[in-house]
Amino acid sequence: MSPEYFFRQSTRFQDTWNRVVHAISRMRADRVSLQQAAREFSVPPKEVVRLGGSALRRMPSGRYAAKAKDNLLRVLSLPGRRGLREIAFDDSREASLVGKYWDAVGLYLQTGDSSGLKEFRRKSVKDANGKRFELLTGLDELDRLGSAGVLSFESIYSRSA
Figure 1: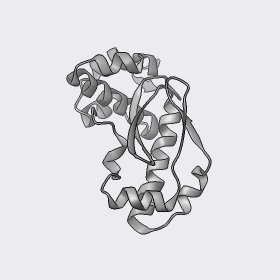
Figure 2: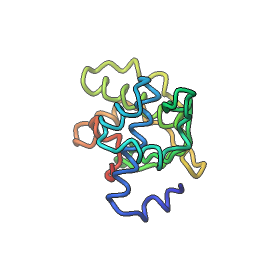
Figure 3: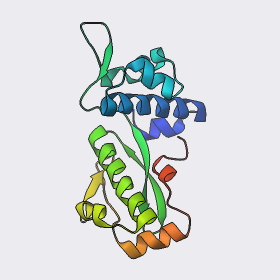
């Protein structure tokens, strides 16, 4: 699915899609069952299979498991010098890196511990169109955005999530 197609869809579809992608990510990260992940994100298991089937594999037992990586579209927010921007990713590994980055940003903003941000210096992520976005690690800039109320844990998910 292209970012253009995703943004042309109804808010209801975007919400369902985001819940499906979250369920699959949860299955992968914590090895929970399809039923448990679907319940957690309030989406029917059949919908997870229908929309996210390419990211799943059916085991001999008949149960589903998440593949090690997938190419499902995810729209996440990234802080930039001018505030948050929505970025579409089609690689679960890039999205996972963004999640780890947000964890480091959150730790810094909550505790002042910037050690987690060091691994993201001079790193970038590639969006669904192949464009690179540098991860913001400047403490002054993060402080400014945090003080302005732009950054919070919920900020990682796009407005449509």
